[in-house]
Image (cartoon, rainbow, N blue to C red; front, top):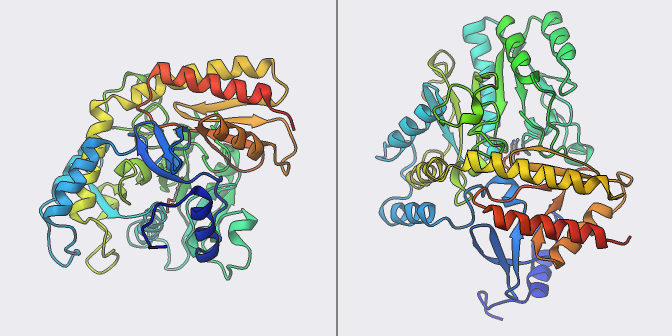
Length: 426
Ligand SMILES: *Cc1c(COP(=O)(O)O)cnc(C)c1O
């Protein structure tokens, strides 16, 4: 067999199993093509993608505008490192900072790297601006968080599978309950060494937990009161996924009418990744104003690939697509339809306990024990019926299609989901 021969699904799965580390447990489907809301397997079967690569493909698979920008730039200049300037990075930084309403942007590649960057930035600010004694800074995080996979980040995870036997862990983090203002207030009042509060506006990996209305705004106000940086990890919730440009939609210029009426929650440090590139390329970023970002000086932090011209060209195109195709508005409208339809369905079906989410980041809770395989088994049936989704923790199925879906397509997908669950037998 030549290396690039066309494989069957079974062959592809066997190759990964034999030659790849077993750090994932994929649904058994082997994809070889994507376009918009659809993906195709190697046998040519077509599916609706209801994961969107964990919300990285908000703009749809292989968006021609994004792919076009990537190919053009790839033919011109791909990488200089930051030892020299390139003529794309500054354009991207200007565009993105103006769009999200911050003074400066620090470019990285993956979400976890951007989270690491935000933690380092927060600590340096604590020592050089806030005046905390060196090595004493604490960062408050939430239980059941997901911020990535580095040694420091898993140090403050409470997922035993992600943590076990990867110690010793990094110090300097205090964990409190998510969506609990009292817990945040208590920790801020009892400890003078707190530098930041790192939070997901909706906990995606934990199972799409939407906090109580007003929680984020009140948490931000507590941070202001205690001179603590509010650090929003919008790697999954950002870039129109939840029906607004950002789930914390702060002082941005997205022009989305759904922003009005919601409190403005301006993060001190904003972390973006995933759909910042529309899934075409690894692009992440940390945004902050000068009073924070200026603590970073040459040599303090960096990345060989961070801010490369392909990433810059791709990110500009990906953000332009979000604006021009009104993806925040679309996610808002389609999300309302999705939750209304499935909540109605849940009332008459014993298997679905409830539906929750915001915009097109949604989940259904399956009525079975946490350790049962029901959610997985339903995802296998959904696959057979042409729709790809994956369980998150416990018995929860996340539904997050690309935002470029039409209403007619969404109704077809809702039908597939209802029929599959109605016909499901354990
Ligand atoms: C996916 C994700 C990350 C990590 O991103 P990677 O690109 O996988 O490193 C961090 N935070 C949140 C909220 C995420 O959803």
